[in-house]
Image 1 (cartoon, rainbow, N blue to C red):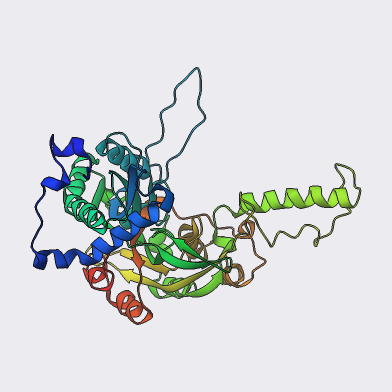
Image 2 (tube, helix red, strand yellow; image 1 turned 30 degrees about the horizontal axis):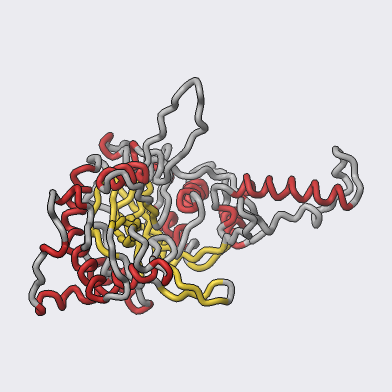
Length: 424
Protein backbone atom coordinates (compact mmCIF):
# COMPACT_ATOMS: atom_id res chain seq x y z
CA UNK A 1 0.00 0.00 0.00
CA UNK A 2 1.23 3.51 -0.83
CA UNK A 3 0.42 6.35 1.58
CA UNK A 4 1.12 9.97 0.54
CA UNK A 5 0.50 12.55 3.24
CA UNK A 6 -2.49 10.62 4.51
CA UNK A 7 -3.37 13.22 7.13
CA UNK A 8 -4.12 15.86 4.50
CA UNK A 9 -6.18 13.53 2.28
CA UNK A 10 -8.69 12.27 4.79
CA UNK A 11 -9.12 9.04 6.65
CA UNK A 12 -9.12 5.84 4.67
CA UNK A 13 -7.37 7.20 1.59
CA UNK A 14 -4.92 4.84 -0.04
CA UNK A 15 -3.58 4.45 -3.52
CA UNK A 16 -5.06 0.96 -3.93
CA UNK A 17 -8.50 2.54 -3.75
CA UNK A 18 -7.63 4.86 -6.65
CA UNK A 19 -8.78 3.48 -10.03
CA UNK A 20 -6.47 3.20 -12.99
CA UNK A 21 -6.91 5.81 -15.65
CA UNK A 22 -7.30 4.84 -19.30
CA UNK A 23 -4.17 3.93 -21.20
CA UNK A 24 -4.62 6.90 -23.53
CA UNK A 25 -4.69 9.38 -20.65
CA UNK A 26 -1.77 7.75 -18.86
CA UNK A 27 0.53 8.06 -21.87
CA UNK A 28 0.73 11.81 -21.38
CA UNK A 29 2.40 11.27 -18.01
CA UNK A 30 4.91 8.63 -19.09
CA UNK A 31 7.85 11.04 -19.13
CA UNK A 32 7.16 12.34 -15.61
CA UNK A 33 6.52 8.84 -14.34
CA UNK A 34 9.88 7.63 -15.60
CA UNK A 35 11.69 10.56 -13.98
CA UNK A 36 10.04 9.90 -10.64
CA UNK A 37 10.68 6.17 -10.87
CA UNK A 38 14.35 6.90 -11.47
CA UNK A 39 14.43 9.20 -8.42
CA UNK A 40 12.84 6.54 -6.24
CA UNK A 41 15.37 3.97 -7.41
CA UNK A 42 18.30 6.33 -6.86
CA UNK A 43 17.19 7.33 -3.35
CA UNK A 44 17.04 3.71 -2.15
CA UNK A 45 20.13 1.48 -1.97
CA UNK A 46 19.96 -2.21 -2.88
CA UNK A 47 20.26 -3.21 0.79
CA UNK A 48 17.30 -1.05 1.80
CA UNK A 49 14.88 -1.68 -1.02
CA UNK A 50 12.27 -3.41 1.11
CA UNK A 51 13.02 -1.88 4.53
CA UNK A 52 13.40 1.84 4.06
CA UNK A 53 10.03 3.51 4.75
CA UNK A 54 10.74 7.21 4.08
CA UNK A 55 11.51 8.24 0.52
CA UNK A 56 11.73 11.69 -0.98
CA UNK A 57 10.88 13.05 -4.39
CA UNK A 58 12.74 16.07 -5.77
CA UNK A 59 10.40 18.78 -7.01
CA UNK A 60 10.93 22.19 -8.50
CA UNK A 61 8.83 25.33 -8.72
CA UNK A 62 8.89 29.01 -9.61
CA UNK A 63 8.51 31.80 -7.09
CA UNK A 64 8.24 35.59 -7.22
CA UNK A 65 8.49 38.02 -4.35
CA UNK A 66 8.56 41.66 -3.38
CA UNK A 67 11.85 41.88 -1.52
CA UNK A 68 10.97 45.10 0.35
CA UNK A 69 10.05 43.32 3.59
CA UNK A 70 12.47 40.39 3.33
CA UNK A 71 16.00 40.19 4.75
CA UNK A 72 17.09 38.41 1.58
CA UNK A 73 16.37 34.90 0.37
CA UNK A 74 18.59 32.81 2.64
CA UNK A 75 17.68 31.98 6.22
CA UNK A 76 19.87 33.93 8.65
CA UNK A 77 20.76 32.37 11.98
CA UNK A 78 21.60 34.36 15.08
CA UNK A 79 23.49 33.16 18.16
CA UNK A 80 21.14 31.79 20.79
CA UNK A 81 20.87 33.73 24.04
CA UNK A 82 19.85 32.31 27.39
CA UNK A 83 18.60 35.66 28.62
CA UNK A 84 16.85 37.02 25.55
CA UNK A 85 15.14 35.27 22.70
CA UNK A 86 15.77 37.15 19.47
CA UNK A 87 13.38 37.14 16.58
CA UNK A 88 14.75 35.62 13.38
CA UNK A 89 14.90 37.96 10.36
CA UNK A 90 12.15 37.33 7.82
CA UNK A 91 13.49 35.61 4.70
CA UNK A 92 12.01 34.05 1.56
CA UNK A 93 13.56 30.66 2.31
CA UNK A 94 12.22 30.81 5.86
CA UNK A 95 8.65 31.46 4.70
CA UNK A 96 8.77 28.68 2.11
CA UNK A 97 10.21 26.12 4.52
CA UNK A 98 7.72 27.10 7.21
CA UNK A 99 4.77 26.49 4.89
CA UNK A 100 6.09 23.27 3.32
CA UNK A 101 7.05 21.86 6.71
CA UNK A 102 3.58 22.65 8.05
CA UNK A 103 1.95 21.14 4.96
CA UNK A 104 3.87 17.89 5.41
CA UNK A 105 3.06 17.25 9.06
CA UNK A 106 6.16 18.78 10.61
CA UNK A 107 8.77 17.01 8.46
CA UNK A 108 11.29 19.71 7.58
CA UNK A 109 11.45 20.49 3.88
CA UNK A 110 14.62 22.33 2.91
CA UNK A 111 14.34 24.77 0.00
CA UNK A 112 17.26 25.73 -2.24
CA UNK A 113 17.18 28.43 -4.93
CA UNK A 114 19.02 29.19 -8.16
CA UNK A 115 20.38 32.37 -6.57
CA UNK A 116 20.35 33.99 -3.13
CA UNK A 117 19.09 37.55 -3.43
CA UNK A 118 19.99 40.22 -0.86
CA UNK A 119 17.65 42.16 1.41
CA UNK A 120 15.37 44.41 -0.63
CA UNK A 121 16.03 42.65 -3.95
CA UNK A 122 12.99 41.37 -5.85
CA UNK A 123 12.36 38.32 -8.06
CA UNK A 124 9.85 37.48 -10.80
CA UNK A 125 11.10 34.11 -12.05
CA UNK A 126 13.24 32.66 -9.26
CA UNK A 127 13.65 28.86 -9.43
CA UNK A 128 13.71 26.56 -6.39
CA UNK A 129 13.92 22.86 -5.64
CA UNK A 130 13.08 20.78 -2.59
CA UNK A 131 12.53 17.14 -1.65
CA UNK A 132 9.00 16.15 -0.60
CA UNK A 133 8.58 13.12 1.65
CA UNK A 134 6.60 10.03 0.73
CA UNK A 135 5.77 7.59 3.51
CA UNK A 136 5.61 4.23 1.76
CA UNK A 137 6.21 0.53 1.79
CA UNK A 138 7.41 0.09 -1.76
CA UNK A 139 9.09 -3.01 -3.02
CA UNK A 140 11.50 -1.43 -5.48
CA UNK A 141 11.85 -4.75 -7.28
CA UNK A 142 8.20 -4.48 -8.28
CA UNK A 143 7.90 -2.02 -11.15
CA UNK A 144 4.11 -1.95 -10.75
CA UNK A 145 4.43 -0.60 -7.20
CA UNK A 146 6.82 2.11 -8.37
CA UNK A 147 4.48 3.14 -11.19
CA UNK A 148 1.55 3.34 -8.80
CA UNK A 149 3.53 5.55 -6.41
CA UNK A 150 4.66 7.75 -9.29
CA UNK A 151 1.18 8.22 -10.66
CA UNK A 152 -0.23 8.90 -7.20
CA UNK A 153 2.35 11.60 -6.52
CA UNK A 154 1.82 13.19 -9.92
CA UNK A 155 -1.91 13.46 -9.29
CA UNK A 156 -1.36 15.16 -5.93
CA UNK A 157 0.91 17.98 -7.21
CA UNK A 158 -1.95 20.39 -8.10
CA UNK A 159 -3.43 19.97 -4.61
CA UNK A 160 -0.05 20.61 -3.00
CA UNK A 161 0.50 23.72 -5.12
CA UNK A 162 -2.91 25.18 -4.24
CA UNK A 163 -2.34 24.51 -0.55
CA UNK A 164 1.09 26.18 -0.58
CA UNK A 165 -0.27 29.18 -2.49
CA UNK A 166 -2.97 29.75 0.13
CA UNK A 167 -0.58 29.41 3.07
CA UNK A 168 2.11 31.80 1.80
CA UNK A 169 2.08 35.56 2.57
CA UNK A 170 0.84 38.01 -0.06
CA UNK A 171 4.32 39.26 -1.00
CA UNK A 172 5.48 35.76 -2.05
CA UNK A 173 3.99 33.84 -4.99
CA UNK A 174 4.46 30.13 -5.78
CA UNK A 175 3.58 28.35 -9.04
CA UNK A 176 4.54 25.75 -11.66
CA UNK A 177 5.20 22.96 -9.15
CA UNK A 178 6.46 19.87 -10.97
CA UNK A 179 8.67 16.84 -10.57
CA UNK A 180 12.32 17.73 -11.22
CA UNK A 181 14.20 15.89 -13.98
CA UNK A 182 16.02 12.75 -12.95
CA UNK A 183 19.71 12.63 -11.96
CA UNK A 184 22.38 13.29 -14.58
CA UNK A 185 25.89 11.98 -15.06
CA UNK A 186 28.37 14.83 -14.61
CA UNK A 187 32.16 14.98 -14.78
CA UNK A 188 33.51 16.21 -11.43
CA UNK A 189 37.24 16.18 -10.67
CA UNK A 190 37.78 13.98 -13.71
CA UNK A 191 35.31 11.34 -12.54
CA UNK A 192 31.77 10.52 -13.59
CA UNK A 193 29.27 11.15 -10.82
CA UNK A 194 25.51 10.96 -10.73
CA UNK A 195 24.02 14.21 -9.43
CA UNK A 196 20.41 15.06 -8.68
CA UNK A 197 18.83 18.01 -10.50
CA UNK A 198 19.61 21.34 -8.81
CA UNK A 199 18.03 24.75 -9.32
CA UNK A 200 21.44 26.33 -8.65
CA UNK A 201 23.86 24.10 -10.55
CA UNK A 202 21.68 23.21 -13.54
CA UNK A 203 20.74 26.78 -14.47
CA UNK A 204 22.35 28.01 -17.68
CA UNK A 205 21.43 31.69 -17.71
CA UNK A 206 20.05 34.37 -15.37
CA UNK A 207 18.36 37.58 -16.33
CA UNK A 208 18.81 40.47 -13.89
CA UNK A 209 17.31 43.89 -14.41
CA UNK A 210 17.99 47.16 -12.62
CA UNK A 211 15.46 49.99 -12.83
CA UNK A 212 16.28 53.69 -12.77
CA UNK A 213 14.32 56.92 -12.82
CA UNK A 214 16.22 59.74 -14.53
CA UNK A 215 13.77 62.63 -14.21
CA UNK A 216 13.74 65.48 -11.70
CA UNK A 217 11.15 63.73 -9.48
CA UNK A 218 9.98 60.14 -9.12
CA UNK A 219 6.51 58.94 -8.17
CA UNK A 220 6.59 57.75 -4.53
CA UNK A 221 4.92 54.46 -5.51
CA UNK A 222 8.02 53.59 -7.56
CA UNK A 223 10.45 53.93 -4.68
CA UNK A 224 10.25 50.22 -3.81
CA UNK A 225 11.47 48.96 -7.20
CA UNK A 226 13.39 51.83 -8.80
CA UNK A 227 16.41 53.99 -7.94
CA UNK A 228 16.43 57.76 -8.39
CA UNK A 229 20.13 58.79 -8.25
CA UNK A 230 20.96 62.22 -6.88
CA UNK A 231 20.64 65.02 -9.48
CA UNK A 232 20.39 62.40 -12.23
CA UNK A 233 18.36 64.71 -14.49
CA UNK A 234 21.39 67.00 -14.86
CA UNK A 235 23.90 64.43 -16.08
CA UNK A 236 22.03 61.44 -17.54
CA UNK A 237 22.63 60.85 -21.25
CA UNK A 238 21.07 57.63 -22.55
CA UNK A 239 23.63 57.01 -25.31
CA UNK A 240 26.62 57.64 -23.05
CA UNK A 241 25.09 55.54 -20.27
CA UNK A 242 24.43 52.63 -22.63
CA UNK A 243 28.00 52.79 -23.92
CA UNK A 244 29.28 51.90 -20.47
CA UNK A 245 26.58 49.28 -19.99
CA UNK A 246 27.79 47.53 -23.15
CA UNK A 247 31.36 47.40 -21.84
CA UNK A 248 30.33 44.63 -19.45
CA UNK A 249 29.44 42.25 -22.28
CA UNK A 250 31.76 39.27 -22.67
CA UNK A 251 33.95 37.31 -20.27
CA UNK A 252 35.82 39.39 -17.71
CA UNK A 253 37.42 39.11 -14.29
CA UNK A 254 34.80 40.80 -12.08
CA UNK A 255 36.90 40.73 -8.93
CA UNK A 256 36.68 44.52 -8.54
CA UNK A 257 32.87 44.28 -8.74
CA UNK A 258 32.27 41.55 -6.14
CA UNK A 259 30.90 42.51 -2.73
CA UNK A 260 32.81 40.17 -0.43
CA UNK A 261 36.27 40.52 -1.94
CA UNK A 262 37.58 42.92 0.70
CA UNK A 263 37.02 40.37 3.45
CA UNK A 264 38.61 37.53 1.47
CA UNK A 265 41.56 39.69 0.44
CA UNK A 266 42.18 40.73 4.04
CA UNK A 267 41.98 37.14 5.28
CA UNK A 268 44.40 36.01 2.58
CA UNK A 269 46.80 38.86 3.39
CA UNK A 270 46.79 38.01 7.11
CA UNK A 271 47.42 34.36 6.31
CA UNK A 272 50.38 35.21 4.03
CA UNK A 273 51.88 37.55 6.65
CA UNK A 274 51.85 34.84 9.32
CA UNK A 275 53.13 32.21 6.91
CA UNK A 276 56.04 34.32 5.63
CA UNK A 277 56.98 35.69 9.05
CA UNK A 278 57.54 32.13 10.25
CA UNK A 279 59.56 31.14 7.19
CA UNK A 280 61.71 34.30 7.36
CA UNK A 281 61.97 34.34 11.15
CA UNK A 282 60.55 37.85 11.53
CA UNK A 283 59.22 39.38 14.75
CA UNK A 284 55.49 39.73 15.32
CA UNK A 285 55.26 43.38 14.30
CA UNK A 286 57.94 43.35 11.60
CA UNK A 287 56.57 43.10 8.07
CA UNK A 288 59.21 45.25 6.41
CA UNK A 289 61.03 42.13 5.29
CA UNK A 290 58.08 41.03 3.18
CA UNK A 291 57.87 42.13 -0.44
CA UNK A 292 54.88 42.32 -2.81
CA UNK A 293 55.43 38.75 -3.98
CA UNK A 294 55.16 37.50 -0.41
CA UNK A 295 51.84 39.29 0.02
CA UNK A 296 50.32 38.41 -3.35
CA UNK A 297 46.57 37.98 -2.84
CA UNK A 298 45.72 37.29 -6.48
CA UNK A 299 44.52 33.81 -5.48
CA UNK A 300 41.71 33.91 -2.95
CA UNK A 301 40.09 31.08 -1.00
CA UNK A 302 36.60 30.78 0.44
CA UNK A 303 35.76 29.48 3.90
CA UNK A 304 36.14 25.88 2.71
CA UNK A 305 39.64 26.37 1.33
CA UNK A 306 38.48 26.39 -2.32
CA UNK A 307 39.92 28.88 -4.78
CA UNK A 308 37.51 31.68 -5.69
CA UNK A 309 36.93 32.04 -9.43
CA UNK A 310 35.98 35.63 -10.26
CA UNK A 311 35.72 35.12 -14.03
CA UNK A 312 32.13 35.59 -15.26
CA UNK A 313 30.41 35.89 -18.62
CA UNK A 314 27.78 38.51 -19.46
CA UNK A 315 25.99 37.30 -22.57
CA UNK A 316 24.09 40.53 -23.13
CA UNK A 317 23.95 43.95 -21.46
CA UNK A 318 21.54 46.62 -22.63
CA UNK A 319 19.68 49.77 -21.62
CA UNK A 320 15.93 49.65 -22.23
CA UNK A 321 13.54 52.59 -22.04
CA UNK A 322 10.24 51.79 -20.29
CA UNK A 323 7.74 54.38 -21.62
CA UNK A 324 4.76 52.57 -20.09
CA UNK A 325 6.25 53.16 -16.62
CA UNK A 326 6.92 56.86 -17.18
CA UNK A 327 8.81 59.27 -19.40
CA UNK A 328 12.09 58.98 -17.48
CA UNK A 329 12.02 55.26 -16.63
CA UNK A 330 14.84 52.99 -17.79
CA UNK A 331 15.83 49.38 -17.19
CA UNK A 332 19.32 47.87 -17.43
CA UNK A 333 19.27 44.21 -18.45
CA UNK A 334 22.11 41.80 -17.73
CA UNK A 335 21.97 38.23 -19.04
CA UNK A 336 24.66 36.35 -17.11
CA UNK A 337 25.78 32.75 -16.83
CA UNK A 338 26.45 33.39 -13.14
CA UNK A 339 27.01 36.34 -10.82
CA UNK A 340 29.28 37.05 -7.88
CA UNK A 341 27.97 38.45 -4.61
CA UNK A 342 26.55 41.97 -5.25
CA UNK A 343 28.10 41.94 -8.73
CA UNK A 344 25.13 43.48 -10.58
CA UNK A 345 24.62 46.25 -8.01
CA UNK A 346 28.34 47.07 -8.12
CA UNK A 347 28.23 47.18 -11.92
CA UNK A 348 25.35 49.65 -11.89
CA UNK A 349 27.02 51.72 -9.19
CA UNK A 350 30.20 51.96 -11.26
CA UNK A 351 28.27 53.07 -14.35
CA UNK A 352 26.56 55.84 -12.40
CA UNK A 353 29.87 57.04 -10.91
CA UNK A 354 31.61 57.22 -14.29
CA UNK A 355 28.68 59.02 -15.96
CA UNK A 356 27.60 61.54 -13.33
CA UNK A 357 29.20 64.96 -12.90
CA UNK A 358 32.11 64.83 -10.47
CA UNK A 359 31.87 61.05 -10.16
CA UNK A 360 34.44 58.97 -8.28
CA UNK A 361 35.51 57.11 -11.45
CA UNK A 362 36.95 58.25 -14.75
CA UNK A 363 36.56 56.21 -17.92
CA UNK A 364 40.18 55.11 -17.56
CA UNK A 365 39.47 53.92 -14.01
CA UNK A 366 36.37 52.08 -15.21
CA UNK A 367 38.22 50.25 -18.00
CA UNK A 368 41.10 49.42 -15.68
CA UNK A 369 38.76 47.83 -13.13
CA UNK A 370 37.20 45.68 -15.82
CA UNK A 371 40.25 44.68 -17.83
CA UNK A 372 43.10 44.59 -15.29
CA UNK A 373 42.95 41.30 -13.31
CA UNK A 374 45.15 42.76 -10.54
CA UNK A 375 42.50 45.33 -9.60
CA UNK A 376 40.72 44.59 -6.32
CA UNK A 377 37.44 45.69 -4.77
CA UNK A 378 39.32 48.31 -2.75
CA UNK A 379 40.39 49.91 -6.05
CA UNK A 380 36.75 50.39 -7.03
CA UNK A 381 35.71 53.70 -5.46
CA UNK A 382 32.06 53.38 -6.47
CA UNK A 383 29.37 52.18 -4.09
CA UNK A 384 26.88 49.43 -4.94
CA UNK A 385 23.54 50.63 -6.26
CA UNK A 386 20.67 50.33 -3.74
CA UNK A 387 18.96 46.92 -3.61
CA UNK A 388 15.39 48.04 -4.36
CA UNK A 389 16.11 48.64 -8.05
CA UNK A 390 17.34 45.09 -8.68
CA UNK A 391 15.09 42.23 -9.83
CA UNK A 392 15.94 38.65 -10.74
CA UNK A 393 13.65 38.44 -13.75
CA UNK A 394 14.20 34.85 -14.83
CA UNK A 395 16.39 31.78 -14.39
CA UNK A 396 16.76 29.61 -17.48
CA UNK A 397 17.54 25.92 -17.87
CA UNK A 398 18.72 23.92 -20.88
CA UNK A 399 18.58 26.76 -23.38
CA UNK A 400 20.49 25.95 -26.55
CA UNK A 401 22.76 28.47 -28.25
CA UNK A 402 20.37 28.87 -31.18
CA UNK A 403 17.44 29.70 -28.88
CA UNK A 404 19.40 31.94 -26.53
CA UNK A 405 19.78 34.90 -28.85
CA UNK A 406 16.18 34.68 -30.02
CA UNK A 407 15.20 34.97 -26.38
CA UNK A 408 17.36 37.87 -25.27
CA UNK A 409 16.75 39.96 -28.37
CA UNK A 410 12.94 39.72 -28.28
CA UNK A 411 11.82 39.10 -24.70
CA UNK A 412 10.63 41.99 -22.58
CA UNK A 413 9.25 41.93 -19.07
CA UNK A 414 5.86 40.23 -19.03
CA UNK A 415 6.11 38.53 -22.43
CA UNK A 416 5.34 34.78 -22.43
CA UNK A 417 8.38 33.98 -24.56
CA UNK A 418 10.05 32.00 -21.78
CA UNK A 419 7.38 29.30 -21.91
CA UNK A 420 8.19 28.60 -25.56
CA UNK A 421 11.94 28.45 -24.96
CA UNK A 422 12.15 26.91 -21.52
CA UNK A 423 9.66 24.24 -20.38
CA UNK A 424 10.18 25.29 -16.77
